[in-house]
Image (cartoon, rainbow, N blue to C red; front, side, top):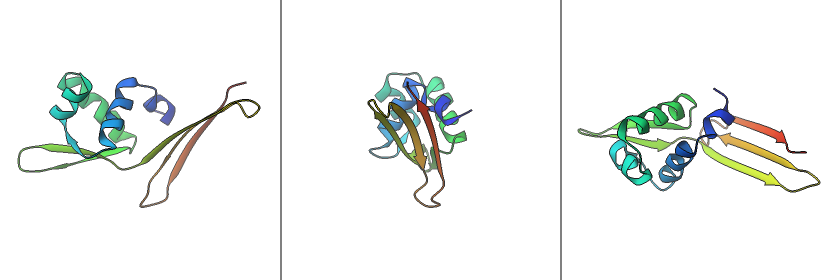
Length: 102
């Protein structure tokens, strides 16, 4: 799945927004974004496969946290571009999806 496909979900964007503050456990995320636990887990797995989140476990809970910086850049004409960009702060690996809008 491309980065654009991964980020094309409103639910996944809400999850990323919540995780930008601090790590959260699944039921807390589900409650905060107004989604059931099963759907939340599905979206978290997609984000994990894309390398955007990872999890760690405590004795009773599974916490998710962001592992990538995700940026959206939109510019008006004459550039008329839309760019979706992610980067790993530790490794410096980057992926950008530029899309011309004209």
